[in-house]
Amino acid sequence: MKKLDIGSGRRHFEDYITLDKDPKIEADVTHDIEKRFPFPDNTFDEIRASHILEHIHTEKKTFVMYEIWRVLKPCGIVKISVPSFPSPQSVIDPGHISFWHKDSFMYYEHGNRFRDGYEKRTSEPVPSFEIVESELINDWHLKITLKAIKEKE
Image (cartoon, rainbow, N blue to C red):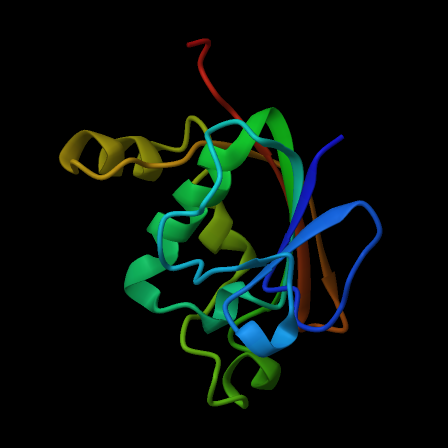
């Protein structure tokens, strides 16, 4: 099982390839997730994104979600943790430059009419996920697991 931890910081989890943009972190791969991920399509069974998505620019949200989707294998999962907006934890850190809520992820859900409408009116690729589970802890910490939905190629 191949696993990726994006925005790993100094944490290293067993069996995960680590990716971080800060070269001082000494991750396995030094890379900015706001750019195309340096992995082929359908590489990973699992991705971990813990407290990293709130640090990407708002206009890059769909791009980053697409890149996560692209490098996941069909039915691969991404486990995401973010501070849920509008909690104080989501806005207190000046490094939090995009805001997420459980409903933010519904936008990427397979069969969601807003996602499907966006896909029809844009030339940008749009990811397709199924929400597997979602939990809000202490009224601010959102943990959500998404499964990559891919048509047979």
